[in-house]
Length: 269
View 1 (cartoon, rainbow, N blue to C red):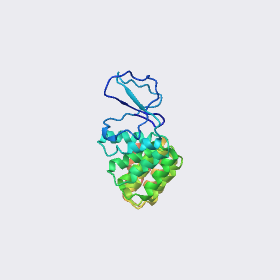
View 2: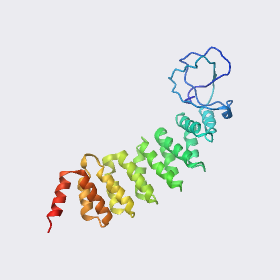
View 3: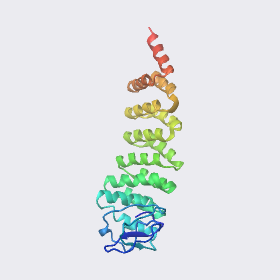
View 4: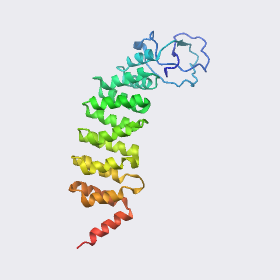
């Protein structure tokens, strides 16, 4: 079963000639289809040719996206593999009903794995509406694991506003572990654009662990552009643990500027 733009199919119990192989791919839902009988859910694109292996195929037509999403949401409490496929199918279904369902799953008192899966799909597949849902979830959720997952989902989003939200999380989230995670994904997503946020964390974040993660981020900036910043941190940061971290990553860089910095230190009487 697959995207919401076309009808559902399921194999019947008795042999009959199959429909043509180039029939449009099925949508994952029908109001008359029972979730209690669903054992396996497969997702196909509309252009995918299906071979029923000689079994008859029943096509359920006139299925709306909202009906499809409603049925799929009813599978979320099933065994893990089926629930995972159902969440993915919701994410690939056209229409605003899919975003509402994913946001509801992420916000509900559901198992953490269900919430985190919904958050991932909001970021990776749902564009600007998905970004807005992630933003609302981030501001409203008290769950640290979920907010860390939101940081990851923002890094997967292609929405231009996702970068600003990730920077906001890196600076302002109340929990150090979430700020640290946001810094990590900010670096993966933005590269050079992340430099200002990472430098700000080194200077101003109150938590040493976050500062150390930010120093690591400087060491990972492309084209060794973090080396001058690491030298500055090693020379001027008031936190000894942060200075040591900067020295460590300078040593790992083998950059000529880092070597010259160490030579200068060693030459001092």
